[in-house]
Image 1 (tube, helix red, strand yellow):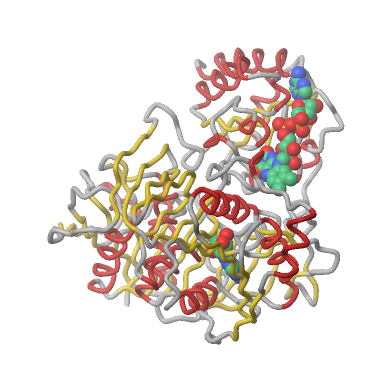
Image 2 (cartoon, each protein chain N blue to C red):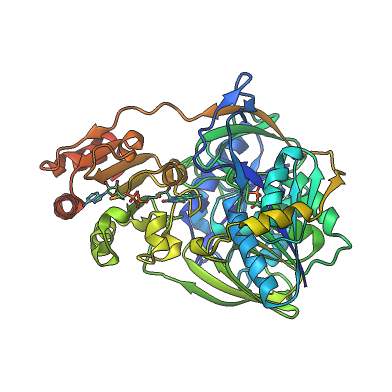
Length: 316
Length: 248
Ligand SMILES: Cc1cc2nc3c(=O)[nH]c(=O)nc-3n(C[C@H](O)[C@H](O)[C@H](O)COP(=O)(O)OP(=O)(O)OC[C@H]3O[C@@H](n4cnc5c(N)ncnc54)[C@H](O)[C@@H]3O)c2cc1C
Ligand SMILES: Nc1ncnc2c1ncn2[C@@H]1O[C@H](COP(=O)(O)O)[C@@H](O)[C@H]1O
């Protein structure tokens, strides 16, 4: 028996979610008095994960482009070889692509959107965000093998060093019915899923030409940019920035909404964020009821001032 | 070509969420149920494919009789036939197994499900079906073209997009982008009349085994009052974010 964490990499470096998943796994392994092992793909500096409590790491080396079936098969094989019972992963789009496949292959129940450390370890009961962040459910996983998918930024990163043994694993050539033809990633931009801070604009910004305000603010904060649904529907911003109940979910530490009214469908998708700030010229805007901090004012007046103040703050 | 669209029935997006019986059950009273928004995009995409080349569009829902209205709505939107697997599903695994069993010898070329349902937000059903029936699978699918036995799809990733191609059969987890909001087909009177004559077949459920169990629900913690900052004193906000919320 062992707890296995799937450690995602990007260009060979561990993603932040890998550190969070390890931290969670370490605590669970301690609680269950068992070992914590990891599986990763193409890590260039695998020893980096040692600080977060992983004791053995299988580093799968493959130049195969991402493909859920292949990745899932490799994960399952190594999970079984390591004697895994609980598999822990994050909630990136890739992980959500792979793990339903893993769940069937391992006959393991899979809980997604887990927001806390298990409320009970035996039986394993997990608190999950449901109804698009309008409530929580405690779900018991009843299968022998189990999968925990934790929501980004929900547990945090905690150091706990262990001695780490790294093993490379080189799979045989694999062929697949699915072909990834091309990948377009905007390397300059921080993705909403990975961001700790998200700056979001709504219809109150009047038009796409005013988005420099949002972008400048995001740049200073190292934040991702997002928008409300009508903004993407009107083509002011790309669909990939649409957040809310029917768009991308946001679980950042800080969410700043500018000229967004705070409709229930918008709030549902961003409610998992820890701290919410609203800037809106209408004091009656519903967002003020959901936010932690608010400024009643004209975005075109407030945001440039905020940018200036932040510049000063950052250079302090 | 044959297309199956998986439809889940979910509380309307404006619903207030309440729990009853000591927070062990979701309170359905007063809730308006709708076609899961992600599935609605997929359904319209399916109807468009049908208009382009001759194909049949079927819809399926795993649910009790209270989900019939949304299946009727799907028929009014343009699906040819509806199926309902008669059980109250407990988890994604059960739904995926029922649907996989249903499609076994029916030769669907394309199965369209949603990226996730907006009630339990599992995001698991399509990937599970694809695995169970050994079909190709594309999640977060924002565009889809099909020609003969091949497909080209676009998947939204966290940082961008991916173009994926392959052969049918294919299962997708679809979302906005498959068609746009303004393209969604709204049933007209004729569609509604016709939907009454279209077949809605009830299928007996086969899988009773569930992998999970709901222990209880919890509401969101009550939120404190918003702290308002004077727009003339922006530095106060930075101070709060830095020292109080500790987020910058
Ligand atoms: C099925 C369904 C699903 C939906 N899903 C989503 C979703 O996922 N995400 C989403 O966002 N929406 C969603 N919506 C839409 C949602 O109901 C709202 O219509 C939308 O969120 C409103 O966007 P907004 O806040 O940008 O625009 P508005 O509601 O028009 O608000 C603009 C705000 O800007 C303020 N403002 C105007 N000028 C200024 C200024 N100069 N300075 C500061 N503030 C200013 C106004 O006071 C107002 O509060 C959905 C709707 C439906 C029916
Ligand atoms: N009970 C159900 N009946 C039919 N399809 C479903 C059901 N539940 C989920 N689905 C499909 O699977 C998708 C993802 O659902 P989920 O995995 O529950 O988030 C939905 O968008 C539907 O297309």
